[in-house]
Image (cartoon, rainbow, N blue to C red; front, side):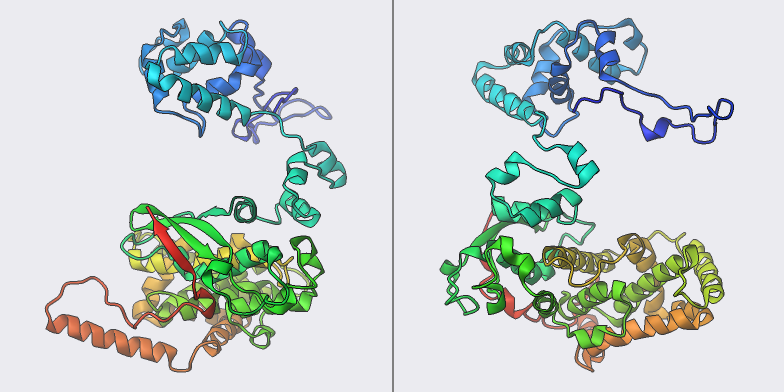
Length: 505
């Protein structure tokens, strides 16, 4: 992308050193331009800069074969790069000076491959040209988007994506995860800091993803059979790439069979936004296994995270303990404390109480966070919640947000929740921090009551009882395992039926 006025990195703005006299005062900064960069290295054509990015390794297209080129090529040496410890800087300067000797990228690519073994040349040439094609200017007009909100893309038209989806993607209201599933029939599930000996944290959110895939790929289903149970061979599949221990596995996942209200009259996909909002909300809540009646007393911006938390509580593997749930909800409530104290709106009451409670929380946080020990199993449990939240958000977005989206910047802090979990394991003292703000304390207990009402009344007692039995058994057998599985793993969800067809390396 050409930047005629240059590039000003935010890190080079001297925000505190305002210069000049009124009314012409300014903030000193540094501005870099491609023209000056190319002029510094002679007659370097800007069209060669993408190839420079590939050759220097500052690009996703880095190839091992290029190391051979860098070893064999005699790159020019500049006097400014001869100082000790400037090897990488010298290589960058040498590459730019070397590229200045070519009229266009094709000539430079020919020269690069001549330094490689003959059997590698054509393959590397094709890969380099394919990578260079990615630098071609996109056909979309961003100026029109920022001025009028309209965005037209030739690629989008060729893919025949619905107009509402193109607009949502342009606004950032939909994740690229959606287009990966819809167009490529392939998704990549990112790994977090997990216990690698356990199944991937994404496993628990599989039924939610199946519903997403069903909405995206269900357009071709026959309206007469939509909503009925089907044989595995009749349903479309999506390839998922996910962690299996410390390796990457490809799994074929079938889409969910959707309710009749999302077939026949309402599909294809470009008609999804015309489905009544009540039906969209119903599908979202049925996927998460929650009734709206239990969410009604909860502030609207916390309804989606709480519905996801109910889902996570039921299907987390191994089954979570009460202190896990309390730690997560306390973290959410402390985020609410921060929101109400930093920017209290007219509807926020007891602001002074909130500030006192938040100050006590900050003191607790400063003291407790000095302990940086990581409990990997606890971290894995909360990774599962984050995976559920991510897919819950994606499904909500695909349905045009039947529930309001939460403020993710204040919703969750992994470090805080991890320490809260450690504290609550031995003492409920962390809950006492809320006693200074009755309003916030009530919110916490409302959240806790809502989640508990979504599971059997003896859910956490059974978990505790099973855990004790397993620990006693382990002691009798003189085992030294670090953690015992507390209950037999339950089926994830009815939608998980016929989910996994095949797993490949």
